[in-house]
Amino acid sequence: MRLSRRAALNLWRAPLPSLVSVLTIALSLFIGASFVLGLFTARSLLTSWGAQASVTLYLDKATPDAQARMLAQQVRLQEAGLEVAYVDRALALSRLRADLGDLAGALDGLSQNPLPPSLEVIPRESLPPAGVRALAARLGQLPGVAEVEYGREWLDKLEALGRGLRAFAAGALFVVLGAALLVVANTIRLAVYARRDEIEIMKLVGATDGYVRAPFLLEGALQGLIGAAMALGAIAAVQRWLLPRAQQAFAFASGMSAPQVLPVHAAALLGMGALVGLLGSWLAVARFLRT
Amino acid sequence: MIQLFHVKKAYPGDAPVLDDITLRIEKGEFCWLTGPSGAGKSTLLKLLFCAESPTSGQILVGGRNIGRISQSGIPFLRRNIGVVFQDFKLLDNRTVLENVGYALEVLGASDAEIRERSLKRLEQVGLQRKASSLPRRLSGGEQQRVAIARALVNEPTILLADEPTGNLDPSLTDSILQLLFDANARGTTVVVATHDRTLLTRYHKRTIALEKGKLVFDA
Image (cartoon, rainbow over all chains, first blue to last red; front, side, top):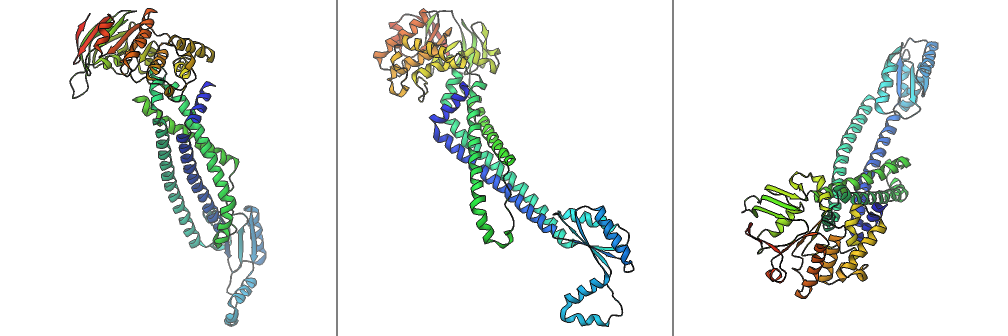
């Protein structure tokens, strides 16, 4: 009780250094959180691109119609969440004819239909590139399937892009968070430095290290919480006012929704704020306790 | 109460600040610690309240060898030692009452007890009416009286004063020293470091003189 009172009184009596610490924490967490949310958005965008890929199973030309339909049914039963459409040889040829347009006459010289029957498989839900690849591999094992096509090259590129993005994000996040912690610790250290006389006097009258440290830690945690709350407010403001305008401005982002900040994310950010404040205060006070 | 055996304090590359000091101060004694600037007076006091540790030798305070006290044990030793400095060392953003009560807060005393005992000490130093003032509104003499009240509020067995009148107008010296004599009369062992030789001739007490880190006089 007295500890909370002392911490609150210290914040009240020296508001400026506390305000600087709070703003530093708020800014650091805002940058870090925006980065993570940006990463989530990019990942969901990649996943949605990956989901557009469909898998086509080309069957042996000699596969009877009934057997092909049975195979389609087998795929539906074996793999949940797939749209499976059977394209018989005649339908394939008519599609080709339609695609060729004016050149369709070239097909008239063919003595027989050269196209095989096929099954077009489309995942109902978004699948990551690795999921599409695994699905294609499983379906390729089915009897009667001569060839599988799923835009391998496109998926490979998408996957490489995802890997690169992850590596970049991990490195950049590490740098951003490291820099934020350093800035916060130094800002709190300056605030503690302004109160070095108080620490000296506390030690002089017989205060234990724990007693000296406790109000500083509480103040640090409180500053961190307030900073995190400010960062949350700023993120909410950006999502509400800035992102809708950005989506109007950039075509590739249209239809892409900003990730929701759930209560669990807010709690994590508040916890991180408190932790950063606590850690920064601990480091700053430890330095003065040693001297 | 205080015993030093062949105590030496030296910093690397410099001549020893204290060299082979052996002395004994009895319980309830009042003594002057004198010598010119740089003689080692302040360093000796710092050794007694563990702000510094000796390079060699043994120091006993209240029967405890302070060289053997762990870092975590130092605060508990300091609770039995009141310290007064030339520059008062008061917290500017706390009231006079809060400054005095600080020493009791650390001991875990209740709010009521802190208030009662702090006001009693302030009454003894004649500053009860200034309890709610901030230190910067007080004169130098009044600030030093607050510092003495803080040093004495938890009734320490030892009071160390480092040039307590050094920053004050000579007319205030007697009233400050009288507070230290009063504390001594109540049984507190008092050691006062001063370079002001007029005090030694005016108040005949045991005098320990240091010069260039050596004990040169004790009588």
